[in-house]
Image (tube, rainbow, N blue to C red; front, side):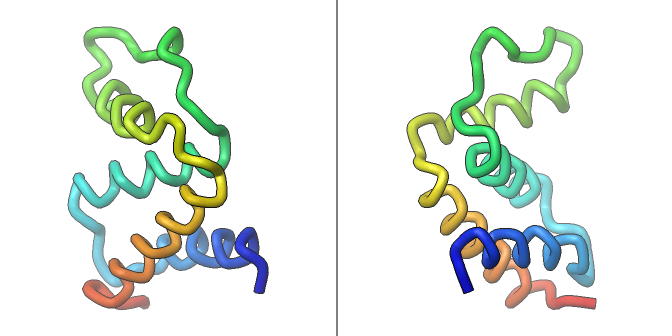
Amino acid sequence: MSLQEQFDQAASNVRNLKSLPSDNDLLELYALFKQASAGDADPANRPGLLDLKGKAKFDAWHKKAGLSKEDAQKAYIAKVESLIASLGLQ
């Protein structure tokens, strides 16, 4: 299975976890997914002051700047596998 196929499978599996991951885990998943899908975050697109959730998500993604698509995919897959091990799948 190619890395892209593994990444796609992990993205599918994350929707079927038995319970919702912690906020920190969700931010990590979001950041890795965005880095793998869209590359580095553009600081000019940071959400406004009142969008706390959007800012947290953007900041988590922005911290992944410089991480290659492949490395982000591998980290995302590993994170999902870790969550599956701790939370299980439905």
